[in-house]
Every structure is written in structure tokens, then in C-alpha cells.
Length: 137
Image (cartoon, rainbow, N blue to C red; front, top):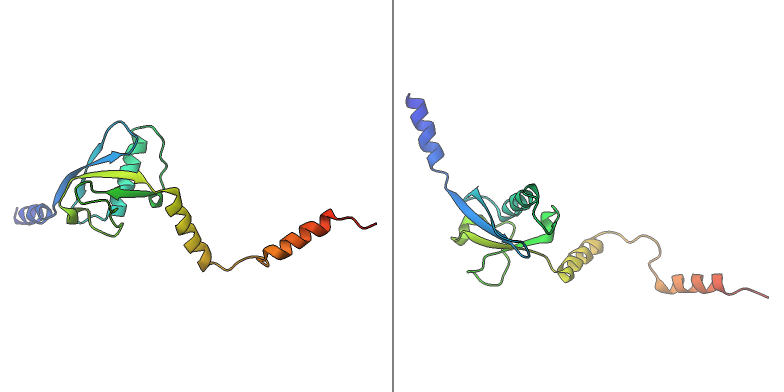
């Protein structure tokens, strides 16, 4: 009996929140329970899975890197994926797709890290294309 009471009090220390996530362009919010210490990235992942499970439209996809979570009360900055969801002190959020320009910046940063394949010179490509089109007499 004593062990049962200890487990019950330890479980009670974990704070849980009922949050509401509104998807831009969708009919209404999704509500689910999360732990206060859960990361924003995990909340985005859970929200996308719930959205897909319910068969909502428009179809958004499941890659959490393509989305940003906003807190309408806190301002216009998106929440960092490494923040805890309880750090904001609010329970209503908006999930939006990242703008195309931001996705391209991320891809450019990734491509700078990778070594380039081929010569990479536009001049050499241009000369090769001209050589193939010009026929000798």
C-alpha cells in the first residue's frame, strides 16, 4: 500500500497542459494533452500526426521541419523547436508552414556545407554547350 501511494505522488508532480493548436487554413483547432517540459518540436510532431489521423484538409505533410509554431500572445516570432512548451505560459498556439524563402535559405546553408560535385563553373558548361551546337565545316 505504501509503494502505491509513493508512485501516485511522483506521477502527480508532472504538470500536464491541455493545449489548442490552430492550423492556418484549417477548419478548427486540435486539442491534446502534453507535458509542460515537452519540446516545441515534439508538440509540432504530435499536432501533425493528430491532424493527419483525423483526415483533415488541406493535407499538410508530416515533416516537422517545414512548420513553425507561434504563440499569438507572445508576438510575431516563431517558437524555437528547443524551447519547452510550458515556458510560454499559454495554451493556444498557431501552426504555420514555413515560407518558401526560409526553406530555400535552409537548403542553401546545407548545400554550403556539402562539397560540390563536378567543376561547378558556369563558363565551362556554357562552352561545352556551344561546342556541341556548332558544327565544323
